Length: 612
Image (tube, rainbow, N blue to C red):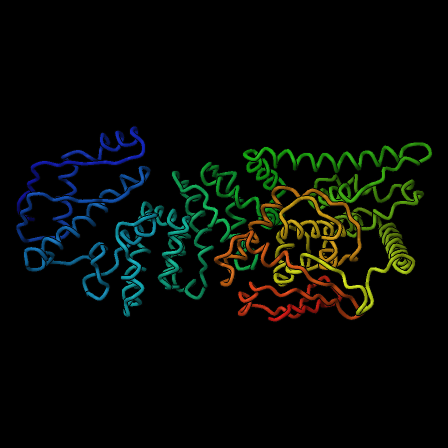
């Protein structure tokens, strides 16, 4: 065959498409014409150096499903795969000698390929196409995972992957942005392969420098996004919810290197790839990522990101602007009231307004001079109801600003003033406990009935959630308003409703370090925080083997919304949780369910989960 031209009498090409215009573009494109098809066939036979005459009346090749955007890239390789399969079948049917004789090259994968044959190595390009296709024409998983010598056969694949060109590398990057592609990679169970793909996408070719570095599938996702950003690759997959949840879960466990995330967002404004930005916008909704960017990027870069990612989400942008505007308006009103002659019109601030001011201060949206004026205004200390300033003073940005811009004497004076205010507040709190209905109940007296006791099943993960929502710093709540927010978020986590009956707050108050009967205003939860909370619960469900088959509502109804009794004594808090048949799923639970220790509480919670 190599010495004579290939004789093709007629070529019939059938294209099935869900769009007529797309089908016409493919059929009338530069690739599907007789001259080019002849060239592809000649190239195939020349490449494989075949020395036997092959005569076929009809050769039917099914190339499977090919994405329109990648058609020109995938078609030639699919043709090679289909030809390999057809010629092997020809060899079997006609009992001919092996067709491929001289200089055997790695055969393309098909459903008959075996890793046990010396000549049947894994080809990098077909491996990438296998990862990329949602429903691949050939099933490679059994071939790869069942072979005893797979380690030996993986090594050539790794070497090939390090040498692939940018077109194949771009397809590899796209494969890492699909759940089916990642699942196939993980099923192979070859850490060295994950490391090789990571090095290729990050273009760090030196193996020795990174061979000991553990690679998670989530890191491959970030490397893939970096590669796409670096080469401004278009026609990438739409954001995959499962992929987003993978990143969220790994961030919760602090198992991802934040440098990759920060660099992605640093380059986002410069690269301005709209399709890539759809992915980054999803990540931007994760509060811990936004906080990372705020911490490590310049103020201007951070503002550019806010403008970039909130433009596509106008409600979020408007909400952000309203919060900042409201906080500045509140402070302006305070100054206006303090400028009146008798200083009698100081606005009374509620918890929601305090939360707005706290958030704005921490985000750097309140001007330094306004903070200094607020804490130095002489008229302010003539007011009797100024205890609300104490939690604001305790914010790190406030104390840092005052320490930097005020004299040592003035700063020490303010510190002493607010320490005294805090002590007065604490003393007042103690008196109120003595004179009013007791909150911390004596042991064996009046157990509190609660209907959300099952939240204790997630006790080790609560600090992770609160960190992700920006409520903690060094494992402590950043301010009192953060505790109130945590109470509301726990209720949303358990019930997914916005209205919170008072009795549902009792246990949440205790878990968040508040008094059981603390009556706080129920502040509406922002949509992005609702989303973060929901995604966090989804990620937990997927990580726990006992819950994998349960839906989010199943988990809430069967476990989180569980009746129980709450008791207090001076040393600890006791909670008894009613047994239900579904508790059989808790047999191999990954953490203890007899005690809970939360870093912001001064006492442990003793759990009596009956019959487990």
